[in-house]
Every structure is written in C-alpha cells, then in structure tokens.
Length: 291
Image (cartoon, rainbow, N blue to C red; front, side, top):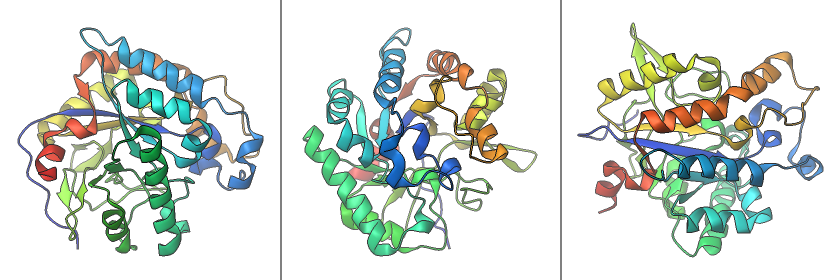
C-alpha cells in the first residue's frame, strides 16, 4: 500500500535532463543489447552542450537543472559531467546500465545504484542525493527498491510517472511528493487530471507529440491542481533529429522515438521562457525533508 502524499505548500518547477543516448532507450532494448552500445556513434556531448547553452540563454537568468546521469555515460565522458557540475547544475543518478528494474535482481540493482553513485561522487567531489529509475520503471512488485536506495545513501527519488503505460507507469501512485515507508522521499513527474483521468505532461514523447500550446496548458493545470512541485524531463537525444535510425526496431518503437525530434529544442526553449525552472535540490520539499 502506498503512503499518503507528502504535504507541499507552493508550486515550484524543476527541469530535469536524463543523460542517456538514443541506443540506451527501452524502446530499442530488444534489438540493441548493452554489449553492443560501444558500436554505435555517441552524440551525448554535443547534445548536452546544446541543452546547457539553452539553459544558460534563458531570458532574465541562467536556468539551473538536475542532470540524471547514466553511469555508462559518466565513465566514458567524465569531463562532461564535471563541466555540468561546475556550471552549477545538480548531478543525480540515472543508474549505471539503463536496465529497467523488472530486469534486475535485488543484488544487481544494489550494485547498479551503488556503482553509479560512487562514480558520480568521485567525478564531482560532492554527494549525489537524487536517483531516477531508467524508464520510470519502479512498480509495486519490488518493495526492496526503496530500501536499497536508502541504504546506498540517496535522499530522494524521482522515479514514478503515475500514469498507465506499457513500458512504465505506477498508475495508483500519488501525483505529489510522498515518503516511502523507510523515509525515502519520492517526487513523481508532472501529470494533469482531465475528466478524472491522469494525463502525462512531464516531457518525453508526449512533449514532442502534443502541440506546444497543449503541453503548456496541461502544465499550468497540473500546477493549479498539485500546488507543486512540477517536474519536467527531457533527453539529450530528443533534440537530435539527425541521429542514426534503428530500422530493426518495431514500427511502434520507431514512431515513439523519432516523432517530432526536430521540434524538441525550440519547444524546450519556449518552455524555459514560459515557466521559472530550477533544479530538484532547490525544491522546498527536498530542502525541508533533508533537515
């Protein structure tokens, strides 16, 4: 049974970047195994740099974000991770190998989240407080996940997308922050409620598929309904329309992955202007819980 939502009193907006490349995604996991990742050209540095430039160019102020970094990426691009941190952004963990949690045993999960945290902390010389599960793959079938995260030293998780979906989703989870039984803070990504249905509006494919005006309206509605925080996410590969095409993937997977990639960056830049964004570690709910 899930606990009650954690009380929040204000609306705040957190922008998050899941630092992974196109060949890491769950949509392609059936045709690209992890032992082949090094065979694919990686564009993570270029795409992350472009996102950071957009964050820095936000009208009125430079926007700071939370980067949920894959350990696989950090191991190969340590200078990039140090640069992200040096610019004042928050570094958090996206796990090490981007495997959905239903594919991991408890021991494998423990090793994954511990190795990722240790690597990132060694690179930036500071604690890593946050975690996001690959593909929002936390569900009700693995209650040990929160205990392992707590034991590894994480203070918060943003691993729940509380909507129905075939690859992810914890449809009955609270839409606002809550504490797991062991005290770990969970901060779900944003959803709006329309006609008693939860509508995803936190980013990803929905942000590329919806017209921008609809995405903005849903985020505003979520803010009115939830009273904060509003958590949004984007992937570096989503701003790269010229990335390699994985033709061996299913039609459904290719549509999900490639739809409207050319629109992501301009829409993201509009989003950065239309809302006042910050990083997860600056959310009042995180600050309050850490005391």
